[in-house]
Image 1: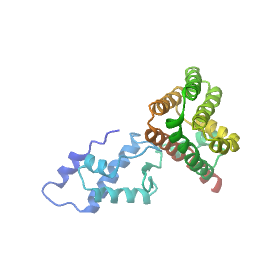
Image 2: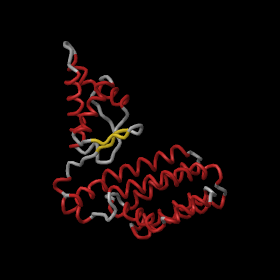
Image 3: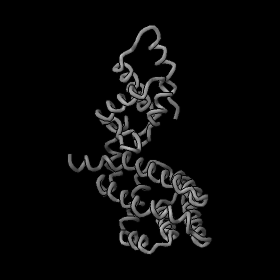
Image 4: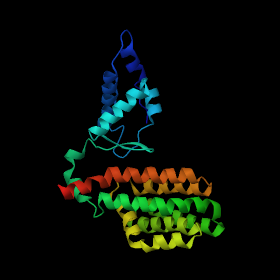
Length: 253
């Protein structure tokens, strides 16, 4: 994603001093325009404050003010220590039938709580996997990935969901900690349902979902635990904001 806006804002500052409020509004308008053009989509993480400052050619103070303004308007969702994510979709108001068709029985709260459970269990398992996984564990993970890729090739969502579960359980088993395995097995049915619902409500082709798993597999085999956890976190944040935040609004409304 590229936001080529710095020169334009710099020109507007030439010859007179713009107020911080004007700069804030300018940044807000530029980001909103990107969302309207779908150059930024719901669930996507924005660049850091420092990166946005460089892109727009303004101070971090102005960027921070703009982000706070957008957060207050519900345009973005900011998580302390993580970053800001787009929280709206310009097509939401005209896609009611699509939303109902893909409505999940997993509420926003349930999704968030299970994601936190995964962080406590699977994210820790990733640390152990890169340290303890042997050849058999790596082969088990590769077999699951091959099954995912085959399902992606044929667009088979049911088989994809099965192999998706096998893939993530291979990570847990490769951590070689029985307590982690038992903790995940205790929530086996919801875990499988959770993964299946992500695939079902996603607008991404099954082949794209398969490619994402290959990227995660590469991080694990190359023993890049931080990158693997970062990938999973960003992926789950995308789905929470893009597909699961709306359901609790429908129920409460």
